[in-house]
Structures are given as C-alpha cells and as structure tokens.
Length: 173
Image 1 (cartoon, rainbow, N blue to C red):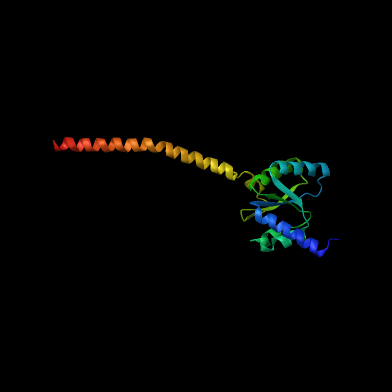
Image 2: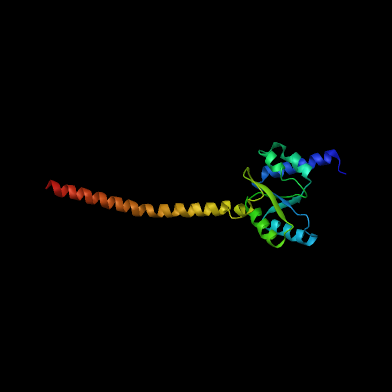
C-alpha cells in the first residue's frame, strides 16, 4: 500500500506532465502481455511520447486543476495508462490506432488535445488530423504561392493601368 505523501507526489508529477503536454491520451491496456506492452512503449518512445501506467485515483487528483476535468474523469475506469505528447498532440492517436488494429486489448478511452476533450469514438478523427508541423508546412506553401504570384498580378495591374492611360491619351487627341 502506498503512503499518502507518495500518492500526493505522484499526483503532482502527473499534473505537471498534463500541464506540459500538448495532448494526453487515456488508454486501457488490460490483456496486453508484457511483450506487446514493450512494443507499444517502444513505438511511443520513438515518437517522443511518454507512456505511464497510473492509478485512476492518482489521475483524478492530478486533474483537479484541469479544465473539463469532470469529462476526463469519466474515462477513469479499469486499467489506465496515459500517453503524454509534448511536441505533436496527435501523434499518440496515430500510434494507438495503428497498434490497436492488431492488438484489441489496447483500447482508447479519451484524450485532451490543446484543452479540448475527445471521447472514446474520436480516435479515427484524431489520428487523421495533421500535426502542427504539417499544418505549418502547408501554410508556408500557401504563403509562398501567394507571394510568388504577387509580381505577376502587379505586372498585370501595371500593364492594364498603362493601357488605360494610353487609351485616355488617344481619346484626348
């Protein structure tokens, strides 16, 4: 049995991880053997995601200061492991979805991504979202296209302006 001060310390550590993460995901892993759990942890580690098995009561304590904590608390049933993503908030969704296709024992419970709570049916939607890096790349591409077309537009505008001035000059003659 864990001592009270140890429980408080763990709850504080989990709360800090929640504050630092851009997204955190609750999963149920009951039925995954040690080998499969090791494979899952390795996939998370490769993506820079921290994956921890935590008692539900300690997660509840850690969630005290989180917005929508009541919505998140509803996912704290059975065994719970939390995936903390500090860089890419949707990377855990991709890993969970892919891994759970071959391992039915891994179940997605819910997630909080940038403060928005996603329920148990949201995994497909989350896993198909673009990462922030991909969004930035797309935005940069769009901006580049717009900037590269500005000289053409400016040239066309100037040509039209010259043409109009030329026509006005011809009318005055």
